[in-house]
Image 1: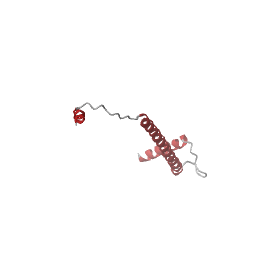
Image 2 (image 1 turned 90 degrees about the horizontal axis):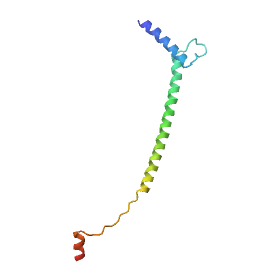
Image 3 (image 1 turned 90 degrees about the vertical axis):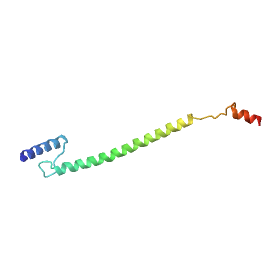
Length: 97
């Protein structure tokens, strides 16, 4: 049963290498797992770096947009403080004194 699973795994690996168009190195008949996974490791490492850079750029853009919208909201929201006409008890008592 294990030999059958090994043969199936080898067959699936060869199909995988064909679907990714990986060619065997010079002097080899078939693509070895070391060859395939070394290429895959380089690809995934490069992809991870680019993904981090793009996320960082997107985050910076979002922060800039948030800062701009905050500045615009701050400029629009000018508050005017006006004094009320004193008509309460304190005002009446203050006038008498």
